[in-house]
Length: 328
Image (tube, rainbow, N blue to C red; front, side, top):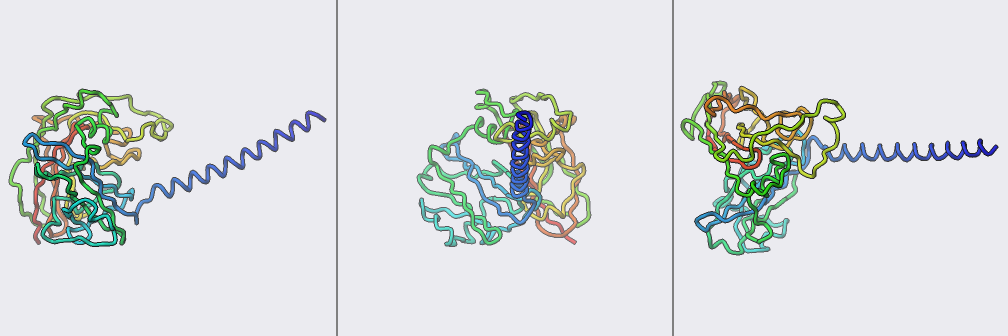
């Protein structure tokens, strides 16, 4: 009799536990569905930080977060994508519009890839910038988001901070990264080019890592489904070190542009087998002969495009744009 009561209690507890577990799993599944929205989400601009240049001027770093996992958006320079320089606090009211055609374009992207795109571009400001704010405004789905660039001390960064924020060198915090030098990059040919729609354009770029820091190394790659799909163990998505190069579409509709060979992603796609340095089990490609990357690009539709070549050692980045006019 005692045994039956004991079993009954255990069975009851088991049922309660199973019910609670099912509710928890359902809640987690629902939370995951909400978190991994594929489309119809907003984009938030980001001020990443600043540092002082050798001549006493300052470099401001910007990026963005596209909350979509798949949807890419094109937002031309204008009332929905603009910069404004102002005194502190002037643009705090998101209901007010500060767009001015004369000052809207500071070299920001107009094509927005999914998810986090950190340290995507920079703006140099003079030594007497003072307490001013350089504000980037983006409006998506009728909602306004702003990034406020300021020289407040808390926003001062160095190469180690950049490496940490992008998960470089597998998330290393090595002091040597504070003096890391960005790769050298040279795109061959003219900066501005004209090509016909459907015509193949040959691109070539030479990149070098002058300090070989962080040095190329490989970590043990996951080999089983459990290892591949386990939840991340770090707050920031991590990637391996080593010189690499890739093209992306910086301005213009990326869906109308195709590259051969296919370019790995320059945004932090952490999904398994996503052709991204932050995606397991991605391996950094070997550097080609003479450090020269060759690519064929084709545009399906006429228009104005900006392609961005990105050389990286996994921790720091160097960019070079080429401007393409595509005609019928």
